[in-house]
Image (cartoon, rainbow, N blue to C red; front, side, top):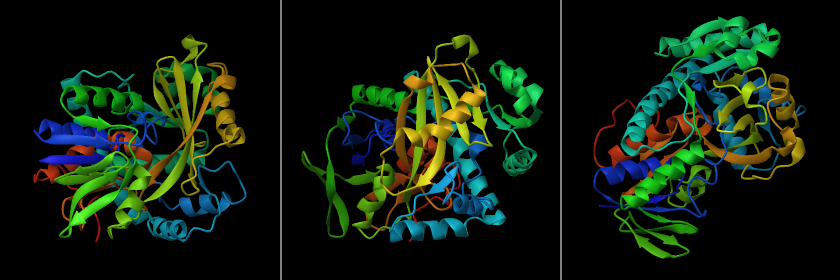
Length: 415
């Protein structure tokens, strides 16, 4: 079987790994000059089971309304005339009840837990290195309101199998001594020992390198123009380098999966959610944290990748716009300096923004579409890095006619 995968990011490359491992011919097409150079390039780098509670929660509607007049909100709406965005937001709001949020948290935790197990098997097989740590993550709270809600969400995850520990500020500083100078600003937190960190772009690029040596063909700097169907089945991919015949086609193009699939009558209810990151050169390594985490009041994620501090914050609904300006990072920089004031040279930070492929309920979209031979693997949203290997394994299993290892009823393509 010849499988053509569209997208060489966190969804596409692990899918290629498992299809190649099953003995199939695999071609991966991407418009960038290398693997993981779009959404997967500079994300938060957290492997975070503890972040499984979805964006669509009872608190989200109020946050979105506040964002219309305030720039310091974790979720932001950039008002625009875009019927598809507003339709997606209405579906998102319908998922914001406590019952739905708790249900979606359970399914997200299920695939995230599975995915980290799958990742360990991939690393054991390939020996790739990507600044990986497995020391757990700290979820930090500054206010009683934030901690009460954060602990409630964590307890929902705990009821579904998450190992976690509620801690005070002194215990947080004992786990991560870099927090000692600012522990008086913290009320407490939650420690999730099964979490970790790692460079998502480096992982994907290294896995692609290994796969190239195992016979997988990567076609970089190649634009996907469309998919040709014959007799109702997907048969070939039209690209800037010519047509590529395929027995199966897997669409793993992140946020750009939606527009391509709609050409074939498949609407996966996907919308891009813009995220921002700063990568700061570390000038005081003795002050750098060795445990990653989140400053939950500021929705600021932090991790150390070699000699760099990666910071991410904000989820913005602004369509397919990936542009950014220095003032977009002002709030994130202030929050980071409050937590780690002297760790690095913030004036030399690399600014980046990318589009998370998000579904209203926060679950990924995997498997068969209504078009024979056409499959999809996308929708990891804020947990795309954590879910990546699991998404790839499940997609490959479905393509190969095998049952998934876990229950995926919330993740299959809806008619």
